Image (tube, each protein chain N blue to C red):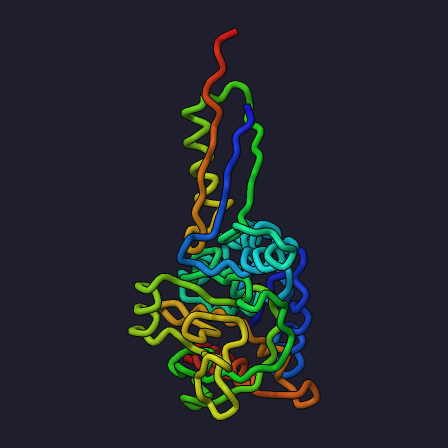
Length: 234
Length: 86
């Protein structure tokens, strides 16, 4: 099993992701420079957080045209696992690998804080070790995390159970007050129809060790590793 | 030939920056301003050989594919009418 972490100019959570895979999960992982046009032999690819291309034009808008993204798109189409965190989620939306878009936070401010999110779908390779409805304590750090899509897309996401995480309070109630950025339906993370591509604004890689204030993100990486291990054995 | 592309958030999409500017403008005492919505403006210098029709088609595609995100934004392209033959 091998993980890859794509590095765009302006990525700044690439080392966090690398650290979690190599040290917490104990699995092989490489950095992949965005200028490469091909992916090597990877089982899962992480698009990390940061400010690719300085967020010029729109967050994630220019990273979408990096040479590596063609290979990531093919990888995803073949069923490869792709996890986009924060800026990675923005890039996935701009690329059309996930529907919708991430707008400026409703309150205009950059938000850097811990939030609670509820696990809404456990039938994904990223979340199967969580309990349905489990409340996770994860950090967010973004200026453009306000998820938006048209009503038809939202209905589709609901019907296909593709809303994976929603902002909630500590008790797991999904309320307007618990919505940090104005996201439609408190959406914090969604997956594609085939469930092999996940985008999320909170940072599980920054919350996988107790010393960082929470280890609630760790099961996401363990979930993925377990699926990959089973596939390798199979 | 210089063409322009304007990109704004769709009417149905909240524009918190525009609202903040409007709020500040009201605080400054400007009267009679109902709403401010912020957008982007691109000045695009085109090669001389390109016809206005071709330029329009090119920029429509550029706006759709790159400059605007159609999920959130709308755009319009302005190409100057052809200058008279010299």
